[in-house]
Amino acid sequence: MSPGAPLSRADLLALVKDARRAPSVHNIQPARWAAEASGLTLLADPARTLPIADPSGHDVRVSLGAAWEGMAIALSRLGFEVAAPEMGAGQGVAKLRFSRGGTADPLAEQVQRRATFRGVFRPTPAAALDALETRLEASEIVVVRNRNDIRDCAKLADDATDEFLLDPRYWRETWRWLRLSHAHPAWNRDGLNADALALSGIERALGGVLMAPAGFELMRRLGLARALVSERAKTESAGALLLFTAPLNEDSFQTGRAFYRRWLEVTAAGLGLCPMSVLADLPRANEAIRARFALPEARRLVNVLRVGAPPSAFPARLTPRLPAEELLLAAD
Ligand SMILES: Cc1cc2nc3c(=O)[nH]c(=O)nc-3n(C[C@H](O)[C@H](O)[C@H](O)COP(=O)(O)O)c2cc1C
Image (cartoon, rainbow, N blue to C red):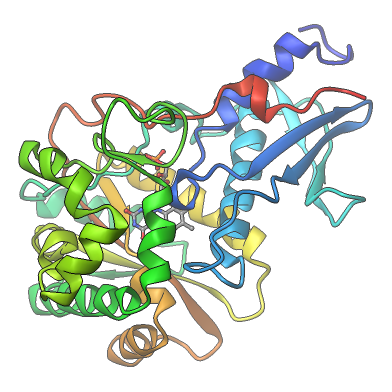
């Protein structure tokens, strides 16, 4: 790629390949890119939303913000400087303009090392958590390390999930993004596959029946669904919980940019992380956490992240993504 020359489609595909590592809710990957003479436009695929779990579109917009940040980091690696997003430009979510003269983002090398860790954490050394706290000092993240607090939040998260499950539409929607068998046509494309979910052998074997909507509804009526989806042991194994907050009126697109950067900081600290969106999404849980940890009135609770030491082999592989060719829209 020569300075000043417009980017070729091959250059753009390489950028999208890097940018697509950004996290998205349920791995729905809503971000699309269109190249123009003056830069790139970020668009949202209108078919990729979660109307039941995310009726306001908040988590999709957070995902779009993360995708933006992913592209900005990818461009920085190639020596480009990225201007602030121009929001609401035409049909797009935001316009991204860049020029020569940037330097690689200090978090760039974490991009290919980051993945959601959904297993049980190994004991997390206190020194690793101290180092993480130091790293996050400049952010407004609240780090919860007290074991009683972590235990109570683990129960609160399971209770919140139970409440969501009262609406059968919630699980039907989730199921559309689960890929429990390699035979699923989208196993290696999007959504949450059994590897990403860290399912055990027995969970994989039975999941196709018990987690399919009809089986799951039966389990729910029998009072057994909670055990199937409980994350309590995983949450209790965390070294800490991070309470991720944002200014009350911040556009969730900007929140998503910060969310991705903080996640890369956790990766840089050698720790793994899993968001627990239910704790922010269920108003009762959100209020309970706000009150318990005395979060400032001027900030909203965006998510609660459990963090800790993953196994040394993590991530054995990165979570699937759609081919870059599908994410980069053809030029008109
Ligand atoms: C806004 C947002 C909310 C998320 N909430 C959850 C969650 O509640 N539980 C979970 O296991 N993963 C959650 N995730 C993680 C995504 O499922 C994950 O980023 C996606 O599957 C891609 O996988 P990767 O992070 O390993 O690349 C969330 C991600 C985002 C961006």
